Image 1 (tube, helix red, strand yellow):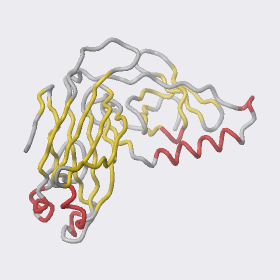
Image 2 (image 1 turned 90 degrees about the vertical axis):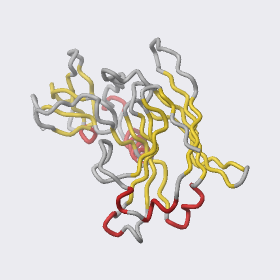
Image 3 (image 1 turned 180 degrees about the horizontal axis):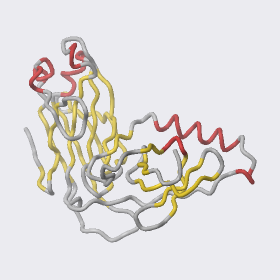
Length: 234
């Protein structure tokens, strides 16, 4: 990595060109507005001349918790005078992203071994709003929360890994969403309450998992809401 290289951020949306360095671990990235954003070199990657805008969602897995713990330990071992200036760049928004679009996705870990593979589930936030979500499933009339949290704009969040023995638990699924923006005005969006019937039989059929714009591998994707239009499947 050298001055002038075009880079994108790994853990959040955005990127720019390398303007300089602070020590051996911090790179200064100049964005399209001319601001220099300090980033850890481990959190950026050099790219070609292709567009690095926010159209493609960024994967954010729960493993970031471990990375954050490593950062805390490193900061404790660093002398105060050696600590770099920290700055969090504002979330970038993409054109056309102010209509809510979100999806629930199931991805086979090894699609070549579909009869034995385990699966991963994701919630995809394909809009410029933060989404506070609750993901839950039902057994009879009793509901159980499987995951809850916040998804940043234009990202996809890993929820859990599961096996075929848990497929029946997913048959009756509900996802609730609350949309908002931080530090700026925005148009109010109604809360989303989407119900799904997830057919366990689909997980045994190869054609169920299709090419898509969010993952490199085929996935089974349910629409929660798209362009502000909520899809409810009973």
